Structures are given as C-alpha cells and as structure tokens.
Length: 400
Ligand SMILES: Cc1ncc(COP(=O)(O)O)c(C=O)c1O
Image (cartoon, rainbow, N blue to C red):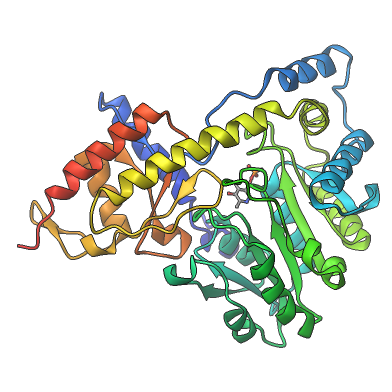
C-alpha cells in the first residue's frame, strides 16, 4: 500500500529498536544488561499514584479543557515561579501528552516550509524527525567533545540565516548530560539579542536532575529581553518517574499557546484527566522522592565514569545531570573481530549486544557517530556487571 511521502521520511526511534533487539535476545534466553533505557527506572512515588486513584474514585474521568485543567496550569506556574523565578499565568501554559507532544505542538504551530531550525548536535533523537514532519528545515550545528558537546556562541552566529525561525536548546542534555551554566547562556543570549526573529525552544525536561549542587538556570533567567521569545518545554516524565502517564507542558507567549491549544484540540484533545490530577500532586506535593532520585543518579554516574575510564581508549565528557553518559569509543573503530570490522557506532552497538550481552544506543542516532549512549537507570550491581562485560568484549577486538 502506498504511504504518504511525509511518513516515508520518518526514521523509527533508535532507542525503541535497540530495546526491541534486547527483548528478542532476552526471549531466546540470553540475559541482557540494558543501558539503552530512556526512563528513570523507579516506580512513580506513592503520593502521586494515590492522587490518581482518588481522581478516578471522585469521577474525574471525563474530557477536561483541551489545554488542561486550571489546577494543573496553576501548579505548573507555581513550579516555574519557584524554580525559575519567572511569573507566568494560565494563558501561558498548554498541558499536553508528554514533553514530546508539547514540542511537536510548538513546531506545528510555529514552523512553515522554508523555515530553518537550529539543532545543536549531539541532539535528542526526535528533534530532526519532528522538524521534518512540521515541514521545516533542520540546520544541524555540530558541537565538539572539546567544548563539552555544547553550542558555542560563534557556532550559533554562523548557523543563523535570514530564514532561521527557531533554536532548540536542551539542558541538561540527552544524550550528553551537559548543562548550560549562566556564563554559557549569557554568551548565547548575546548572539540571540542580535537576531530578533529567532525564537528559542528550551527543552528543560531533565532540569531537576542536576549533580554537584548545581543550581538550575535557563536562558530566560539570565536575559530578560529574550523572555518573550522563549518557549519552555517540560513535564513530569523524568523528574517524577511518570513516563507512562504522558504529561508534559509548553510555556510561552499567550498567542502561540492559544494557537497550539487549537491545534491540540483537533489532534488529541486533552491529555488523560487522571494523569493531570496525578501531576498536580507531583508538582505541589512532597518533593522528597525527586531529590532522592537525583542523589541516586549522582552516585551511579560516579561509578559509570570510573568504569569508563578503566576501559582504556575511551574518552568521556563528564555529565552535569540526567541519567545518561555519552563516551567516545572511536579509538576502537577500524578494529576487527571474527572477520568483521567495527566501522562506527552501529557496528559497535551490535558487537556489544552479541559479545557482551549489553545494550547501548549508537551515537549516530544522536548525530555523533563516535559515541555510544549509556543510560544508568540500572542498579550499581548491573552497572558493574555491564562494564565488566564491555571491558572483556573490547579486549577481543584487534587490528589484525
Ligand atoms: C530531551 C528530551 N526531550 C523530551 C523528551 C520527551 O519526554 P516525554 O516522555 O515527557 O514525552 C525526552 C524523552 O526521552 C527527552 O529525552
């Protein structure tokens, strides 16, 4: 059957296909250590689950307002006031089915064919395909390991053209875990102030998972004059282990929010009423579990970095947050095993799956073929076992 040209351009999610491969091997009796997972790996905290059950029992089971219930919009505004120090009202907020949906709504609302969107690379896997679906042009701005894989002001300046409509900034980043501090943001803000037609999508979905006592800072906090051009994308998925509940939000200019709400009204209507009530509790209730989760990830991150440096011939930018790390394995490219050559991140991913029984995500899915993404949403024991297996497997690779 003929499919649309639009759908023909979409690449299936690399993360999902790795997980499918890992599952298929597990079914055949092989035990896989899965560093490919893109979610925290803890249960949703009990107070949030209870709030969801109470909402069902009290009959909150019908359509809600398309853009979300006022209680959740108020909770979002309260969280943004507390964490960003910025004041927004209900008219600035659209509640959607996850951060991914919030991003897609924004792209569909703002972008026309011919518009250019700057995506710093390495990037989260879904940005390029979503931009493509919205009919706009991706402009990839490569960032180097030397710069911590972070967008430099000069590179931003070079990437901007008269057609640039949007810059996507993801901090802390999936896949690198790097976060833009105030100085880095100020340098980017200086460039953006010179180009007043460029809007900014600030994907802050990991903003509460920061290590080393780092304080949250974002573009709108360091440069007041940019605030009207910034759209914040956030949600409860990662901070509150609520990936399955599908609640995200978009914050920004009321006219754009209204248009994006109209778009959502024709596509999905409101996100799940029950998930919305659970999210009110997530944002306004006890924050202890979110804090504890970050502490756990920080401990795991230390272990992962130790184990990576022990692999030899692998370099790694130290993450500031999230639960990802993005080491460079390119020193192993060109090596051979069993008559086959490891030519890039895809080959190495396959090799590690088969020889180490370890699943990782190839860096080429994030626009950086030298690297592999490891998620450490695993126990300390699993991390140790996984890296033991990776080390053993890498020793089998040779130049001959
Ligand atoms: C950078 C980034 N943005 C957005 C999302 C989407 O989050 P959600 O599950 O809320 O749709 C993800 C999920 O992996 C992500 O990594």
